[in-house]
Image (tube, rainbow, N blue to C red; front, side):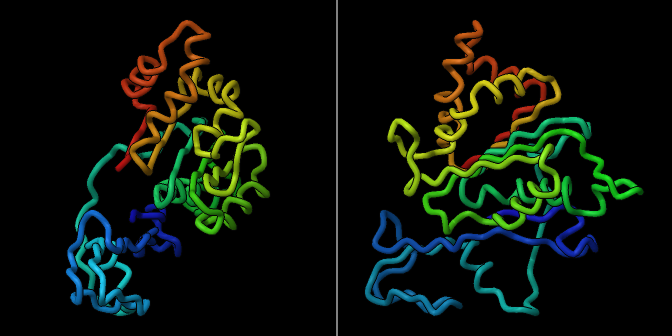
Length: 245
């Protein structure tokens, strides 16, 4: 779960926040916080009375809210995932699952919100934003309508590619993970990364970083560089932003 709206909120009043949440319910798994007979129906009516159940504390708390409930919030904290101030920057976004949340907030600001527009209606952002999103099934491709709209309105500034691991395979017959999809554009992405105003934002599952190494080690080597050292250099320059869990 994470914040999926820009600072002004989806209604652009600066008084609301939109969240992207997946309710965590694990039945008969490794961990349990409800023993057999303890599980109670959630707001969606789901219940497993005869099983051991683990329910994610925060995700279930959020999903069971009702309109009008008071909500305790704290923050903001953390500066790892802030967009660069340079409007000519290139933004490469890598997201798995609910890791799409911060990417959506960026795209709202760059391509939708009035806060990201000039007085004449043109967008302040002049660079390229390229999204790679990985999910197991196509039904989990969140915000696809928005991505399609941005691509239609700003074809030279926005690109998006999906990796659906349980439903797609590459030419070699491998499951389509984010790194598999990125490997189709290795040269283009590598050239972008050489530019000092290109930033990488990564949010989602922990394995994403090793996926990057798998994808870009060969081309880095071909150019006489070590990928791990190159990525470290990008981090040092403040243009490699990672929030994984």
